[in-house]
Structures are given as C-alpha cells and as structure tokens.
Image 1: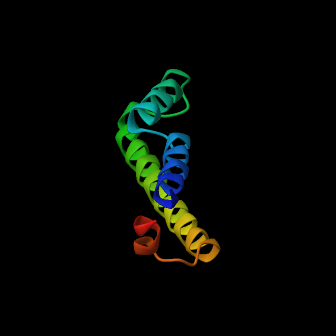
Image 2: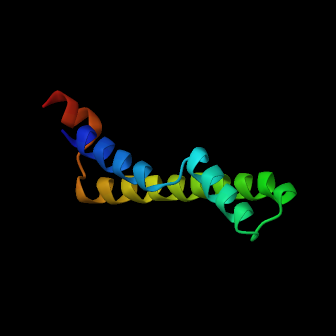
Amino acid sequence: MAGLIERSLLLSLGVLTLTRDKVVQFVDKLIEEGEVKPEEAPGIVDKLVTRGEEEREELRKLVRQEFDRVLPTSRQDIEEL
C-alpha cells in the first residue's frame, strides 16, 4: 500500500515536470518570436532538461524523506502485511 502511494505521488510529480519534447516546443516558439537565436537553442534545451531532472530528483528525495518520517515502519513490514 505504501509503495503504491509513493509511486502515485512520484508519478504525479513527474507529470508536472517538462519533458524534452515540451522543452523543444517551448524553445522553438521562442525562436519564432525572435527571443532566442537558433544556434542558442540546443544549449537552452539541455540546460532546461538538466534543471528539470535535478528538480525532479530533489522532489523525489523530499517525498521519500517525508514518507519515511510519517510512516516509520520498514518497507519489509509493509510487504509482510
């Protein structure tokens, strides 16, 4: 049960983060509007994707810490139930 809740929370958080495709679409729109030069696009995409991954990992750690704090029983105990 606890694993299911944790996975659901992490899945929900993952949906909130931008995928590489969405980042590319966003940067392409900025290029069309003249906000970004085409040669700058790959670097911007890489930065945004990397930052999104870092933030997702930080969120994952926070969720696990809070989950462990709220539910002090071990995973093995939960699986035995």
